[in-house]
Length: 67
Image (cartoon, rainbow, N blue to C red; front, side, top):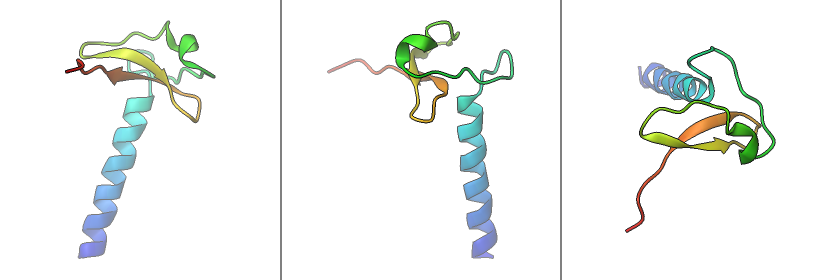
């Protein structure tokens, strides 16, 4: 039973990472080499900072105010 719960949790994490890395408006990836190539990606609030991940996919990141 514990193995099934662990498997379901891992699948939820993998699925959520996949959704975060996809472009929800077009349903496709935006490939990049650095952050400057992600500027044409549309991000909704509060995810306003565009980042290029290590494996070359643009994502929107949440910006926290410095305190």
